Amino acid sequence: MIRKIFFIKLLKKLYEKLLQFILVTRGDIVANIINKEKSENYIEIGVYKGDTFLNVLENCPRLRELSGVDSYDAKNYNNYQRDNTEQFNQKTLDEAYYELKYKLKYEPSTKLYKSDSLKASKLIRNNSVDIIFIDASHKYEDVKKDIKIWLPKIKKGGVLIGHDYCIVHFGVILAVNELLGINNTQILPHDIWYYKKK
Image (cartoon, rainbow, N blue to C red; front, side, top):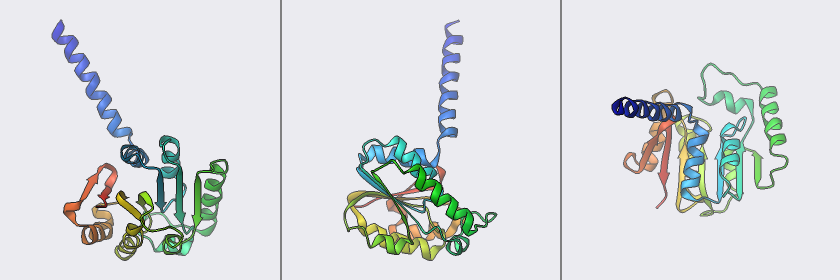
């Protein structure tokens, strides 16, 4: 009887762990990193509808400043290697921008830059950001450019993370490995890469 109870409890714990793994989203992982690092400011490059951004806003009470950057430009989006089945039109992107802007209306700690990555980076001081999350274009040249322009913005000991470190977006893998080094980068669930600035 004791073995049976023990076995049932063990199965229940395994089931709960499995559910946690299955139900964890990209936003949950990013929020976890932010909380673990005790970050006070965060920038997300490639916000789109704001799923990750809103998750971070809701689950990271320590953050005093959250900024999102996205061009919301159909021409740029359709050049990205995002989801090959999804084509973006300007109306869809404008709606996504205004919906997110509306959701952030009463959040004074947030800023949403409707801008390309390079222009937005010029508004941010070097060595001033705790965590930056890159999830914009997946083309090799664009990922490389984003890493080069945003890495100097991160404080010593801060973190640069990104999404889509997977074979489908091989340009992300190449750029991350080339600029940050395969031995200096951790790969997390949901194809998230993690680099701590020294």
